[in-house]
Length: 498
Image (cartoon, rainbow, N blue to C red; front, side):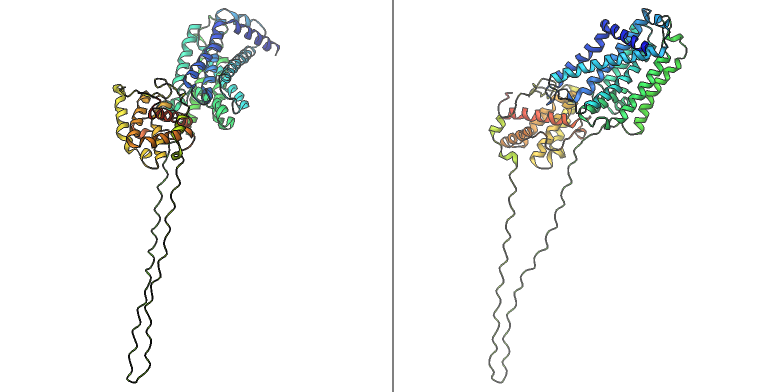
């Protein structure tokens, strides 16, 4: 144990003297955080919905680049060959290296979290779950870093191998690109990458149910980490003269690969690949109430004919006078429907909206100018939406408030998943609205939507309009619809000149 602690102290001191390790361990994650903040600073709580991605990047940078770079550079300088002369077992050096790297990654994560809190993010919903989840993530990626260090014969090889794993995990592994924005084949491929489970486990501690909703992700990370550490320890090299191609026991590399494959196959078997879509389903139309049976018409008794006169003089029988029909009771008219809440709004309510929204040429809620035409590869999609929008059921069936709110989602969904066509569809929606609804009525309804963005159901899939792709987070779609409602009110009231 003394040897482990001594080597742990040496590893930490060497780390803080290595500029390249500090770059990958601390500066690289902070660059990602600043970039995400610039992209999503207009969200109500900045960065909260992206901390799973950001902390995963921090762990990836420290484990897949920092750890193998340190190990291989020390091996090239002969540091590990001198360690071999000491009477300390290999496992002690590997264990202390893993613990040192975990502490480094943990401090990098704390630095990133502290900066996010400083720029306006709220505290995680489940802080203890966050610590546990981040520990599992760090363990999984440290195992991956040990494998990279075993495969690489020199530091440039570490950079090449790290990029071969890092970039695919960012793009199709669910780390930097939301899974809902990926095509179906990429969502299946992502099941074989531990980055997907890292994001799910960490994000669940911020905005989900904590560990209760991340059991499979934690199990997948533990399996990948154990397999990586085992393979990395068995393939460990003390001397730079030992080349991986000449190394015995290279089959241990299959243990790490088998863990990735096993996790992906289990996820496929358990149906964990599909991304849930909260596509709105219109409530079934009410069945018309059966028509009431017609009330029987009041019967008017016939007048009784006078009795015939007997031959003998008798007193005449009085006739019964005809009965006057009773008047039919009057049915009160049905009560007038209550006035909708939006109808009570005034221009003053529209003027009171918060018009501090992202610019039209920005990344969030872009809005094409009236004379701006889409490029050729997007023109077909825009024209398809323009031709179908008038008969699109969610935007034409129901009351005006519901229809207009649903039409805003045509602009909000592509914006939420950052599709190339995102800046042109808001103009299509806006033109359709001003052609369909009276101006004053439209201003009131859009103002009400901007005042109550949390109301109504959310449509996250508009594939029936020819726009493929579904937004995974309904809250992002709500937020984008809120921004577009304000932008359209600004145009209708003259605050935005075009």
